[in-house]
Image: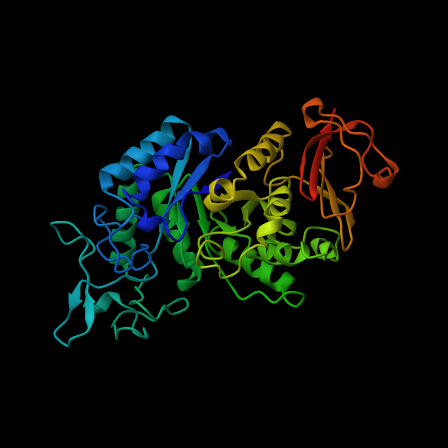
Amino acid sequence: MLFQGFNWESWNKAGGWYNFLQNSVSDIANADVTHVWLPPPSQSADNWGYMPGRLYDIDASKYGSQAELKSLINAFHQKGVKCVAEIVINHRSAESRDNRGIYSIFEGGTSDDRLDWGPSFICKNDTYSDGTGNPDTGVDYEPSPDIDHLNPRVQKELSDWMNWLKTEIGFDGWVFSLAKGYAPNITKIYTDQTSPDFAVGEKWEDFLLGQNEDSHRGDLKDWVQAAGGVVKAFDFTTKGVLNASVHGEFWRLKDSNGKPPGMIGLFPQNAVTFIDNHNTGSTQNEWSFPSDKVMQGYAYILTHPGVPSIFYDHFFDFGLKDEITKLVVIRNRNGINATSSVNIMASDSDLYMASIDDKIIMKIGPALNSCSFLPITNLEIIITMDLGNRVPSNYQLATSGNDYAVWEKK
């Protein structure tokens, strides 16, 4: 269970984000979260950490100091929760200009020459700076120089830095930011050389609803396999289909083979599902989930295969901590996991209903809301004619809310 422990405004928190998040460690751990995703930790030319420069310089981060970060990670570890760093290695912000006046001289943030690079470490087809390294193996990132990941010194020194984040700072795994910025076999090199407990790549491609779901999720699967099959991928396909489905189009949640239409219907063991993150939601709001239907989204991903990710904003700012935690507890109590089987019982305009592992039944959508529930404290349900006998009598209501419900066997 992944928890994104920051949003787009976290860098600006008075007193520092790391210190602030200390107050939420217990609530996050009590939701049976296994891994917390923290923001890019290094000095950066921007406020958010996505244009990093001096990679070893943690004290210059807008989120807090190195000591504060280590204290936060230790607090999570004390609760049995592991910490995952977002790693931005596709590009770097240079420290100074070269003799041509171009920003291409990098400083690693140490007294020696680790990560102190020059133009030969920049891809030669880079649009920001005319480097002299190998051609880029992925998409170009225009705001900063793209790093030549075919350079053996780059591979070694970035791997050394990532291992330092593990041994010195305490991180356990990685979120690979802008993973399409370099070839997937490059991702494999870094996972092989750092042995993360958990790793997931952000491979965000254009999503065309009703046109490219199969190819979209197929590309995610291909990327995972080309990266060695160890790293996972954020399931942007499920995100896109689910976004649309909650607007009275729940039929979209079943593909032509009767399976879930996202990556979880194709390669669930390597899929990380999510409702929103700091890019799609928060104040960026680039592709946000309908705010009045967020719990329907969580009722879906927290009962389905894949590795679910919970967003800080929904858990705390939306006031959904208790509802989300109940769903996580039900998931874990019934052993629902990344490879659980899904039997879709209904996928209509106003109802999606599925049985997972023959242990729980869930529904989202306004249909069946007229059925009469006994208090959840009794974990009982009256099966009325409105249910059309869809829920067997040996199941009882485990939790319910606005347009969602979950039952488990008695």
